[in-house]
Length: 126
Image (cartoon, rainbow, N blue to C red; front, side, top):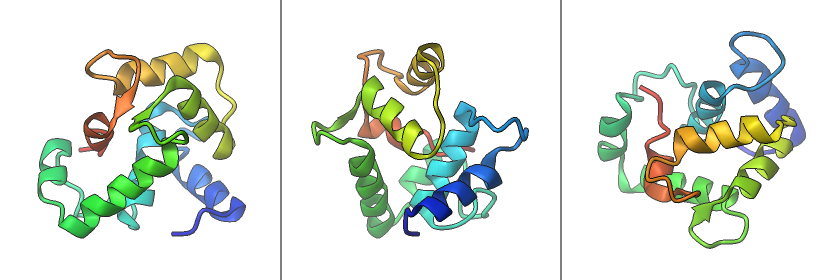
């Protein structure tokens, strides 16, 4: 899936489940899942989040890593709060600082202030 303005807008509209014209964290995860898997989030290939990553092929893991690297703007192997904010801006979501911090809190399971690849993999919804 190419990431032009039209496809990003389509993803946002399709995944704004509560139609409030804002992307909540769960909706954001659905967008990322769709980008990673190249299939709708309701696809039967998406299983429980922990099991899904373990059952992915090497090619699928490579695609997931490439997606992570797109979000990791400075290439340090982590998604910072600022990179997350930039990403949300790119998909048309202007979130306030509290919303960004809440998203980071949900994703940053080891509480180091960053989303690493292992945490990113766990964002695959059940």
